[in-house]
Amino acid sequence: MAATRSASASASAQKSAPVSVGNRLAVRSGSPLKTTSTLNRREPVEPAGRTANKINTFLLLVLHFVVVGICRQQISFVILSEHDYTMNFAGYPTFKGQVLNGDQLWDLIEGLEANNLLYYTHLLTGYIGSVSFLNTVLRVVNKLRSVNPGLTYVCDPVLGDEGKLYVAEELVSVYREKVVPIASMLTPNQFEAELLTKSRIVSEQDGREACNIIHAAGPSKVVITSINVEGELLLIGSHQKEKGQPPEQFRIPIPKIPAYFTGTGDLMTALLLGWSNKYPDNLGKAAELSVSSVQALLVRTVEDYTRAGHDCQSSSLEIRLIQSQDDIRNPEIKYRAEIRGN
Image (tube, rainbow, N blue to C red; front, top):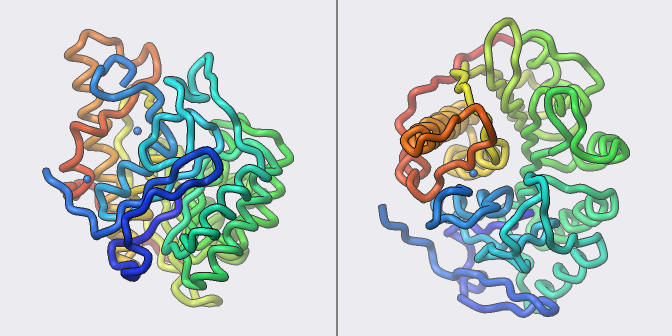
């Protein structure tokens, strides 16, 4: 989970300050971020386990957000986080580290509140593995919106992929009934969209109808980040600018890359948050930039592994973030949104 302050946040919210939260330290960077030329196992300059919060934090820093990260799996390497990182993450066969429960998360929030640090412009959540923690996230959203009613909550409802759940089945109903209604933007994959809408997606039209169901539940912006239908890999986007009005919908065809990567969902959601903040009324533009960044990063990753003599189809590849900062900050748009009828 990452809470962000855009670079235009109030001066009182921009003082650089180390904030003690229990026995951890949250570091806030104060002034608008300046960057120079903003998801590894075999790359010594990047520590292993750069996933979820690590990806989100890095990307949003590059896109000029001030970030405070709170992640459930304490893998403690992250710079802007309250965690004790090991060198692993839950995607590897073996991982270590503490797991925050809901009460511990709330303790962190109370620590931020005690230091008058609850004004945030955006909240981003990804993988959450327990009902306790997810229910506390709901409390966090309400708490943050009591301070800033305009808080944008971007939710990547990580439930599973390709017909397989990653989490306990009981979380599905909590997402569907409690989380979706309060989200500003939802970024499910095909399987997750099916679970949340209780529908099957076997065509592009099915994907757009699933977006309509999600709009009716709450979020004004929906991006189904990948669907495999009719021989194509597509991103489906939908923006309902006014409740009750037909949404603006589009698709972006995405080339298939014969490799498996760690962290593409986290990467896409963080980019969508960042670019949607710059283009709040043009989700298609935000998606074009996000897809173009992701594809550039994946191509660079494959090239890097291939040069090292690695078989890119033999195991999951960890995305080359550090080398790809220009593609994050200023991507060349190669993938265009195709407007679709409602």
